Structure formats: structure tokens, C-alpha cells
Image (cartoon, rainbow, N blue to C red; front, side, top):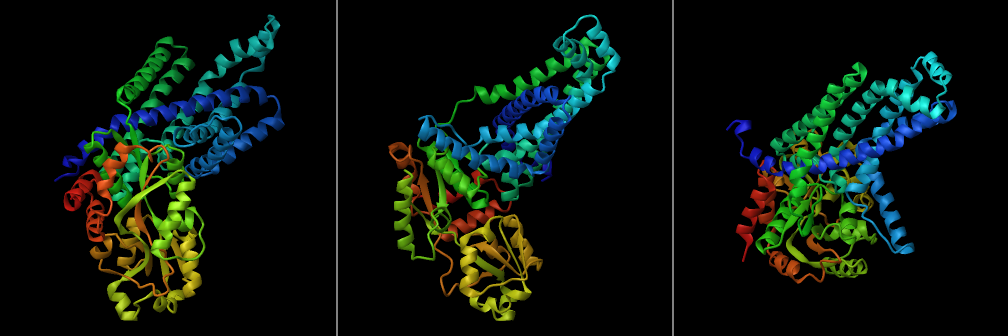
Length: 515
């Protein structure tokens, strides 16, 4: 089957109205906010070298911050402000998704608009300004009737650049809960579904090019003083916005939102939860690709209604319990900790997905390594790879302390890629997941943990405070509890990592485990 004959294109197209509409909404709001801030500031500071330099310097520094980092930084800041507002004023707001994305993207839009506005205004012939003042125009009239019209083509060039930057960077807003065309890219990377990755990249590129060309038409119209070109560009932009927003705005809003983290298993389980809700006659949608801290805070604040987490992650990372405890103790502690936030632990799904140190079976046997204790003596000559958060987690610190681990190099990788890397010898050891089907696919071995340095990681289903008393939600999800064994989850993860969509895999998983 050819790439473009792949049925996954149809599934990608089905999500396009929702993803594209959300992408346009956040980009449009961010660009409008960026213009509303940048244009007045540029006009106010252009005659003040100190303020102008400081403003351009600030905007330049913002551009040096990676887009994903800038987006992520706004989330905890807004979360703290929302809590402060709720406690002092009795009015809260959502720090999840749209708002942090708009604020971060608006900052990204500032530099080209500031720079081009100042350059355009400074490039006007002083004789024209003097002539305007000579006929009695006030400074404000001179600015609005002479300077701005003459500088507008240059300003439009800056707006074009800002629009392209905002549309491109908006694809990175998925991890903070903002639906966008980046949903295709993040989901495709995690499940190795390259159709989704290609579709998301192409859709974002086409949108950015279309907006850029329509703005270019307006720019040429202003430069040539052609009202027809300017009007055509404006009408084209309006038509594009309406065409992209109308389908998503006309759609019905889902009653429940299911969260998912940034790896394959989470996409499968989120799809399974959504399908169980829909089978019970409840409407649901998924917010996928969320970071560990973001997703829990989103659940606690009610921005999502349910998701699957892991007992060890919550116990060690979210609630900062020291050391390691037995499984029953971890679950008991968790119920108490979660209850303080109003979060309900509905139950465990029946399998555990623990971190584990993993090696190729043949190499481990050749070196006589069966456990992490055996590995410790050879670690100084080896390279280890982990996911993006493993080396900053307390589990890793506890592992190193317990076994005296000191590797030559620590590398961070996208989870699915690190399995291929260890199988091919690019790295020696990886911090894998015990429920991952790639362990069997690449003939890898999980090293024993004789000192139990890694905590238990039961997959547990959590409900938000507002979902705790929702009988329909609980009844729809209760049949999942205790049904999914480790072998079934490994097979599902392997299928999802082989290019099948989470929807297809989750349906097969339910057929296998349902009562």
C-alpha cells in the first residue's frame, strides 16, 4: 500500500476541523494581542533611545527562549496567579491550554512588529514630517495621517513575519493542553505514526503560507496604493478565518475531557477511556501529550475529568514521599494525598508500568549482568538513555544512591527511539518501561532490582473533583478496573508503536479484556 493510500489519512482528516479551528483561534488571539502591545510601544519609544533599546532587547531575549520552554513557563505562573485570585478575590480562571499559549505566542510576535514599526517610522523623509507640521498638523495628526500610512508597508512586513512565527510555534502548545495542529505531530511521534506527523507538518505549513501570502497581498496593495489588492487580501484573510473556525465552532462541546501523557501507552488508554464513555452514551474528547505535572494540575483544577497515572510517579514525584514503600502502603498513602486535592483514585487497571533498566539480552548474558547490582561495576564505561524526565526524577537519584550507579554518559531520547538505540548498540542501557511491547520485539531483558529501589507503578484511574460524584462517569469506567493484564498492555503498546492508531488498538484491547 502506498503512503497516500494509507487509511490513516482518513482518520487524520476527520480530526482536521477541530485541530485546525483550535490552531487558528489561538494563533489569531496571540497575534492580535501581540499587535495590540507592540504597535503602541513602538510608537511611544521610537524617539527615546534608552526605552527603545530596552524594549527591543527584551523582545530579542524572548526570541532566544525555545518555544516549548516559553509555553511551559507560563503554565505554572498562571496556575499560581489563578490560585491567588481564587483565594483573595473568590474568582479563579483556567491556567490550562488557551491562556498560557496565547500569552507566550504573543511575546513571540513582538520582536518583528516592534522592529519593523520603528524602522518604518524612522525611515520616513523628515521633510515630509516638517511639511505636515508646516500646514498646522498636530503631532498626533502627523503620526496618524502621514507617518503611519507611509510606514505601513514596512510594518506589514513585520506582521507577516510575526504571523508565520506564531502559526509555526503554536504547534508546540499541545503539551500545555491547547489543541492545535501539533496534536498530529506529538501523537505521531509517540506512536511512530508518520502519516500523522506528515499531515500535521503539512497542514501547519499550508496555513502559514496561506496567511503569509494574503498578508503579502495587503502589503503590496499598501505599497502600490492599490485598494483592490488591499481589499482582496483582507477579504481572503476573513474568508480563511471563517472557513477554519466555522466547523469547530459549529461542533458540539464534549461533556468529558480525558487526559493523556506523552507516550504511546497513554494515548491507547485515553482512547480506551473515551470509547468506554461513548459506549455509555456520554460525549468525550481527549487532551493528549500533557506533561506529568501539567496533567495532574489540570485534573485537580477540573480542566480534564479523568486520566491514567502511575502510583510510583504520583507517590514520589507529585507528593514527594521519601524512599521506597511497599505497594499496599503506596496505594494507601496515595488515596489520602489525592483526597486532600479532591481527586478520586477510582482503582487500578490491573497492570503496572514501572521504570526498569533494560539491556539487549545477548549483551547482558555475555557480560554476566542479571541485575542492577551486577550492572553497577560496568556502568562507568557505559552510556544510558532515558526519556525526557527520567534523569530529573527522584527514582533515578534513589537508584544511583542505592546501587552506586555512575554511567559515562546520560542521554535523553524520545521513548520509542531509545529502544531502537539500545538494540543497535548506540547506547548500552535504557530506562525502559515494563509494560512496553518493544522489550520483546528487540529481545531485551529487564534487569532485576534486588534492593527494590524502584517504587511500584500500578496504573491507576483518577477522577477530577467534579467527576468524583458523577455516577455516570464512575459507572462507565468501573468495568476497566482490574481488567488489563501486563501481557495485554504490552501487546497493545507494541501494536500502537507499529503504526496502528490508538483508536484501533484500544478497541482490540477492550475486545481482549472485556468481561
